[in-house]
Length: 576
Image (cartoon, rainbow, N blue to C red; front, side):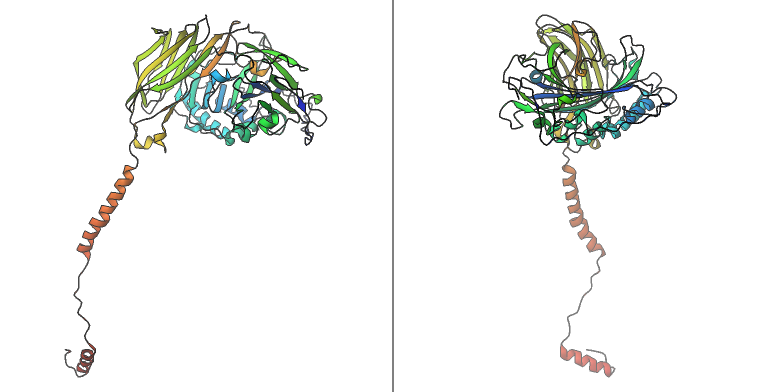
């Protein structure tokens, strides 16, 4: 291995064995071959904080029509379970994510695909759906079974219908937001039972390709872990004469260098995932591994690639897993990564946000949302979406937006008040962020008193409020390449770019943990104990006195008297 600030070397493992390719499926010549394609990628990026960012992306393209009258019956690469969901519920787009941990933007930069803590689901339905709410409810129950999650807890109390946010990411200009539904479960816990069905959706499962590195023991030991599924329709060519369905499965994880017990900044695939790569997925047309070497340009590798990612031009070392020479003679690939501390300067995120709850007591409070524009001379608008549960009654007349100590009047405000036990608050605002400024959005609220049956088993832990969603076109430091081709890396082409000088970004704030007025749930136990004691002592004693019969018992006579009574009885004389 060649050592440098970032060393990337292919090490042959003596214990590695050649993987066996999957048997080819024999299809009769009379049956047309399905036009589908599968690609897989892994991006490894050393972060300036000393952590390692690993991003998996698996994309399946299929040229078919799920909305036709004749239902699709032959599935090859596209998972049948998701195909039936698209067909049955007339889904236009579906985006679902499960995240454990919070993405630290100021330490790690922007992620390739953002996601909030917990579970997030937003769906665009086709225009043919008549009852969107009923279809949404049934869809969440089906997805709950597919991904083994608690999505069945999504109902009208945590579902909103945004009016400006969450535009479709696929083709089609949809303006009727009545077919859009968005919901989050910030308390959802992500575990192995969610990862297992996710991996079964892949054409090769976890038996071959990059998916062999997805070992739950290592992934869930990381500082941040997120898995997602995105379904949308995309163009097949630049003229968009034909379209295809795209299924993109992603896994993003950040491995902590210090918590793993490593004394120096040296990582490898085996140290991160406890496994090495042995082969590409036999069904994949492209299987590549990218190592970000932007901060260490002196590192030379055989194949380099450049891509504009989130407004920054990055350089990657590329390893093509479909080439046999990549694995060496023993069919095993283990990449070693070394880098020095404080090498280069981190590109400061131009847009950052955070949120917290202020106030004291359990009656009223105030929600503060801070949005940072770190650009030195350019201002840009942001679209803020807040979904607040009904038990936090917002005083919308106290809403204020300030920037640099002055009022900043939003150019667009959409507010839907909540209804107790029916629907949450929905607040959307379009705000212009001045350059190099902090914009603060505050609103006061009053805590509601719940019924005793509405409290969770651990009411003193608090109640979660979902993350705020901020969408914006952020000024780019380099010109974006608008010519989208399939030769570009997948992680650089998820969100569409509208302008050459800007790129789209969506960020999430922290979820809030709010305490509500909570009764003393130990009091019923005390009342029951006291009542039972009073009943047992008081009523029990009185009942015994009223129902018990008393009899006077004479003392036993002596032996001589008993003998005399026997004799008197034999003689017919009354006893003594």
